[in-house]
Length: 481
Image (cartoon, rainbow, N blue to C red; front, side, top):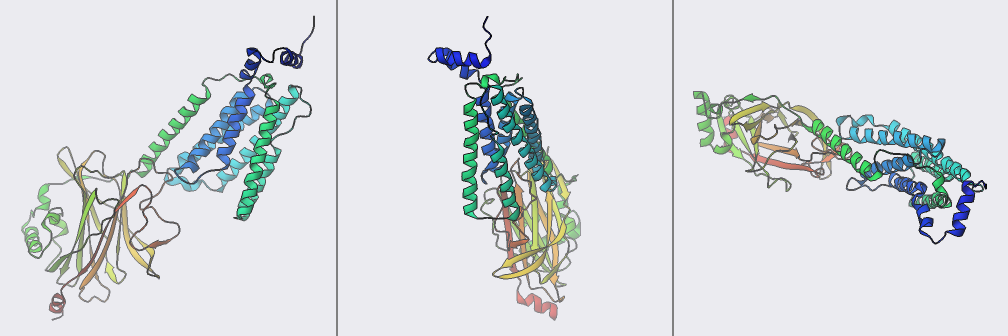
């Protein structure tokens, strides 16, 4: 009996059955070509990314999964393929961890260590892949099969060196891309050498085929990221019920102040949204002024706001800034406020209150307002100003979401204040998935910002209430007299 080995069987089939369906079936049962094609596609996606439409996150994530799926098929071929499969799985875990942490406030822990760990895993995988291809070629009877990926490893190390020295030369970049394309073609040629004998590499059994597994992984990752994003951005507040009488002058003193404010021009609708306790310490009111409102184009169809300034007999100004959502509109997942005043004026901590209705009951929460300092640019001048900010979320499925902020300002020299500047920006983040995580308001690169908050972040809505108030000069003379 003749003892045929695999190489003799292959040669006989190629000589005698080249035009039959059986010859085509030999390629169909060859797992090597399809598996390596997935790996090469994954290498392309993880090496070059596009910085728009979240492709810098999407492509590498799909890429590492394609590499894993390709190596999953080959893992039974030899020890090198098995090692490459384990390293590809480790990289999928690392990338998944990075994606999940990126949507949380803890994204700062993803420092250089994740970059170097990822590159180390990738280099180890390239070594295992190249040696696995070489060993598969030897097992198939090829003469002098090549270690296909060592040039790619050298290319990867050179690219890391260029990144470390910070070279931004387009010439170097173009040469590196061209060389990388040639290296990928080299891997493809090595795969071509095994195309007709690659059925000697057994296809490992799997529970799920590649496409359903890839789609399931991506779906679960998006669900997990969305859930973490909602948890990270939703900022609950401590609520308490409020009786409507607190807005109507429940005491004689509060009722008297309300009548006086309306007589002097305070908007009656706005006044009906302010609690009695924020009016009773006004003292003698000398004048009331309202300012022009500049609403951001992103929120002009969703939110509305107004500002009023009350000048008192002791020469101070009490500001009231109110806002709300128009009919049928609802707040975002998280909201933020930033109130900035003129650097020539003294001001105290802002009192912020938000209100909403649920099951015909009115609720209120007082916001935690933080004081800080910002640097801004205005027509070439750089200055620092104090500002007050807060983050908060309205409860889901609530109605009548609104709020107001109130604070005192006075002249630095304790003279009678005859003017005032109010700049209030109210932000709303409406995206359920914020990638990467950003606090409201989304901060530009560096500490320097443009005065007034120009340049809103992607997915962020902003309404600006900006008022410059001047009071009649006679009210100042009355104080001086």
